[in-house]
Length: 60
Image (cartoon, rainbow, N blue to C red):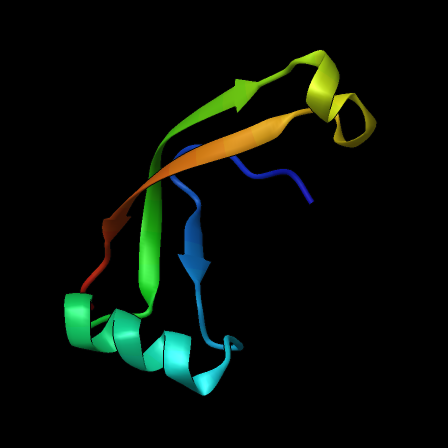
């Protein structure tokens, strides 16, 4: 699966505690990817790098 900008991430299968925190903080479990950056260095070479996703809450 490829993660791209403008995809929506739906956190519905998280553990109950984490999902409750998202709902308390943002009142949603869906987030739009507005920006993505990739950090590639020798420390993370085995995993091809680290992704930072910048998310914005989505309200239906």
